[in-house]
Image 1 (spheres, rainbow, N blue to C red):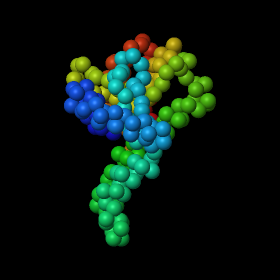
Image 2 (cartoon, helix red, strand yellow; image 1 turned 45 degrees about the vertical axis):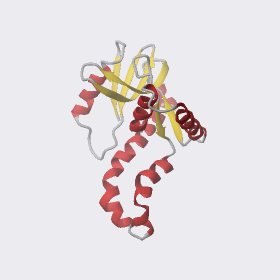
Image 3 (spheres, one colour; image 1 turned 120 degrees about the vertical axis):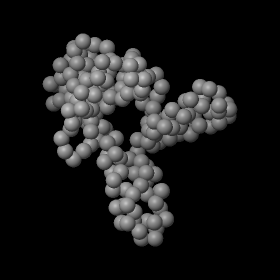
Image 4 (cartoon, rainbow, N blue to C red; image 1 turned 30 degrees about the horizontal axis):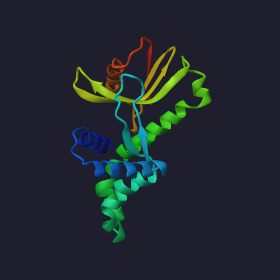
Length: 187
């Protein structure tokens, strides 16, 4: 979904889309958002990117267009099991990553978890922006900003322990956010 977002806004910014096409795309995006098929999300905090991200929020549509539609003719000819093992099975962990990020976000909303937090949360969500040192785009899966500090988290869908490098990378990403007290969490 990032690919669409970058391409669409770059085309609009550089005036490579004519006005009618921009209008048509915005109308279609608004319709998809109203139907809860696509969601529009902004980065948390002032240091994040000001550009919104659009992503398919309906998991049925995500699954269909990622795994069924590209191989539909094989499924229709009763070769679905063959395609699953050849092309789909290896992509399931990456597909589940976005879903797991949503589960972590919902978990962080639970009253029992909220009571244990160090601060009153004023804003939370994902954060993305540019790292001027590395000269690349960076994303943090969960960020909560509050009066007592900042909580940063990475959600990784995998069958095994997380590597120390994931934690160290989260600490490195955390330097891009203002604030003195930071808590890092891996899910």
